[in-house]
Image 1 (cartoon, one colour):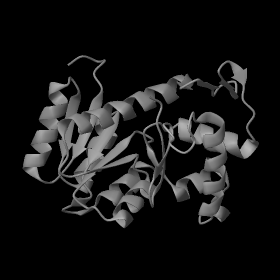
Image 2 (spheres, one colour; image 1 turned 45 degrees about the vertical axis):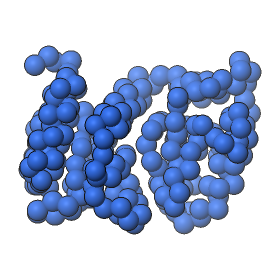
Image 3 (tube, rainbow, N blue to C red; image 1 turned 90 degrees about the vertical axis):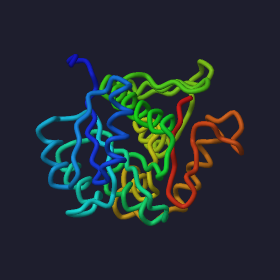
Image 4 (cartoon, one colour; image 1 turned 135 degrees about the vertical axis):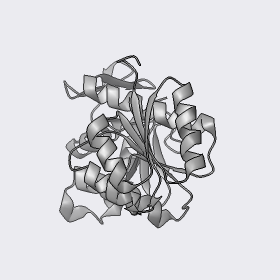
Length: 229
């Protein structure tokens, strides 16, 4: 296989679903590896060094969140959870453990591939330290500047930290806790009202219509997602 092919590890104990996901990704020219347990998944992740992990939460020797937590001690690759669990608490637990996204079974091939490509693009963008552009807003993360319609955009230090943290994880669901800890620190992990206030201020500054945002989206009961397109 070509050295340029992106490598994806699929961790799923249901054979039919694992084969379906692996075949779907292989047909799209990804190099795919597979595992059916937490233990095997960690071994494959450490030896294969994939660019992304797609995994189920319910595995025969443990929970997928345990794999995510262990993976996050040495890797920041994107993790997409595929699960039949629809409870908000399960989603929040997985995202707080370090997952980047959560897709509920059953899912369509188109949505699966769109999520995978979005996260791989995000990883490539962060690696390059590229300029992030959305709408008429341009963010240069290296120079720490933000412009709107070619004019400098004034944001407060807190607004800047919040926006750049979101922009560094495009198309990822970031929980309230993750954002609060990243921007305000661990002592403010429960202060969700901070987020509501500052997200409102940012939307007024960068969205064409703050009441119907296109880029700073609310994930009800969970957190927020930054969308470039």
